[in-house]
Length: 222
Image 1 (cartoon, rainbow, N blue to C red):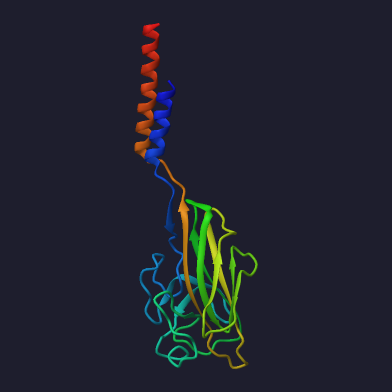
Image 2 (image 1 turned 30 degrees about the vertical axis):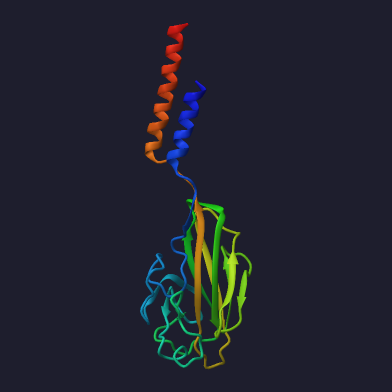
């Protein structure tokens, strides 16, 4: 009897799959076309993951990839784009933006993840400064410039289901305004919770069938 039960349990464990690390879909730097983080968007295109939820005189929700050849990247005022992320801003083409706060956010789904295993790693810069929040929490990191990146790591504060990481950018422009923007390099990993495949239940059934056969055999021999 015990052998049959142990056989059933072993089959479930063998076919359900061990927990495995996985890149989190939708956790991308700025300037990508979609949640695979595989293709950078063209200059002037809308960012495929980040939306602009707050912006002075900007309706949103699109955030646009800043031209690499024009001001302020081409002139050397902002640090250069890279394969990990491109500058984005509230308008295309980039013009003088009003002073105030611009909030860029990205959402991702952790429904199948072990939340204790999730880690986001990134770096960011902004014109003029920015802070990072997760799910509306307090400031997790601060960047105060646009010529170099500030790194950060987030390993707590996640919730089951949809999560939101936000970068709150402050433009300190004068009365006439000047360009504002954000660049983020970002990746996320976590362990997927194992889910038994349909075949698992076939083996479970075989285990209990064996258990029933052994019980029947014992009654015949009694």
